[in-house]
Length: 311
Image (spheres, rainbow, N blue to C red):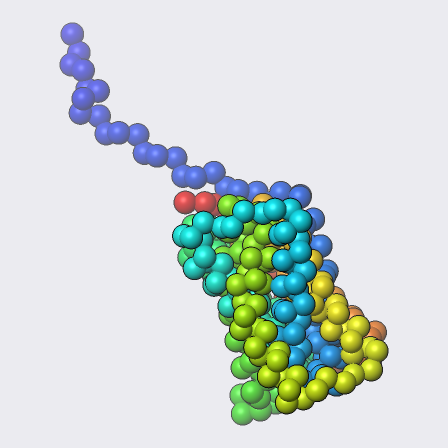
């Protein structure tokens, strides 16, 4: 009789987690959010030409917070659990405070088209946070494409600025905005899976509203707002769409996920923003800008087709 080797046999190795494919619904919602956000930089440029950047950055958050409070009251949404508030505050710091303020001040001196391509770093920043916080495991191809896109954006910035010595404070502000938004996007997507996509931005806006209200008051007292109709219309878009409705779609798409893959859709945003900047602001489409945008989008197309694993 043959001895039973089952007791000494090595246990079977666990199978690796199955790759997560990008779902069509996630892509659709993600693109809707990107389309809404693609007007943000041109309209910010219009708004800060006649309004104080502090008023633009904080005031739109105050208006959006009022809209969020109305939605939460009408839907009788319950207060999030206490354990979730540190994460909600992190989202607020990234997308309600950090990104609007940094871009508002940067676009006082930088063209919207320049800012558009620098913001092309956002998908890579979002992917990094998704790996750290969401336990997503992008493939090697994904990282190669994402890093190539980031390098293309940095090269564009350096060339457009006339070399490293020509970099301006606006470039640093835009890069800071990338870090802030990437963190807020990924953390908000994870929260959206627990409390809902539109609830995340509504609660984040309310969390930041006391600070934003004080800053808006300071700006109004120091620089009483006066602007032509186009300035107020641009501000209205920033408050109602860029800061509010756009996040309904964006967080919904990221929550469907994978976060790292859906985040790459935002690399289309620079191209859309360049088109809007040319049509709305008359900014020229230089060869450098066009090449930089196309290189970034090509990297995005490769990254979004890569598979993501969840650990």
